[in-house]
Length: 179
Image 1 (cartoon, rainbow, N blue to C red):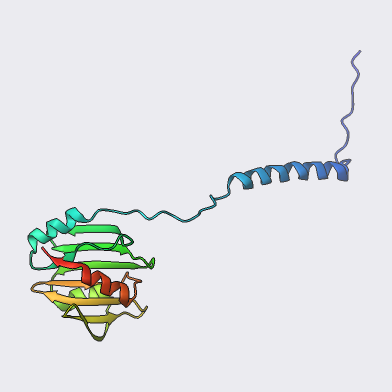
Image 2 (image 1 turned 45 degrees about the vertical axis):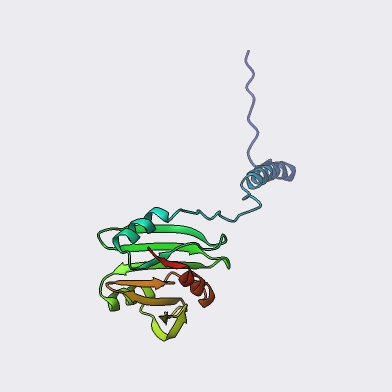
């Protein structure tokens, strides 16, 4: 004969049973948390690019326009674009002070280029760098840009994406060389 055993009724769990269940869940949470920790150095590395090909191509098309040349080692080029049809060269740098500065040379109407690349900046003053006059613009968020025209090309050092101060922009302008 088979004996029928009644299942115990629910609701007879003890406090100890609940503590054991909670302990298991906490062990799982701690293990997941431990393995999900970011590395001790959570800084993202800066991706350095070589703008030489873009700068050379632009210089061969626009030999009278100065382009960035040798900058000190702590200047790291992080972006470079040359669009032949638009006669647009942009090279971005992380400066020694860990700010961002950009060189942009663009063909087009001076006022449109200036406004687009300085963020509709306001003319603050004229700055003389190595004997050349540059117009200093500041946009509403404080980004500085130095602007100068070479024939049909407007050169903007800084741009609206820049966070560099005037000292870093001055160093970038001093690095500019023709051809």
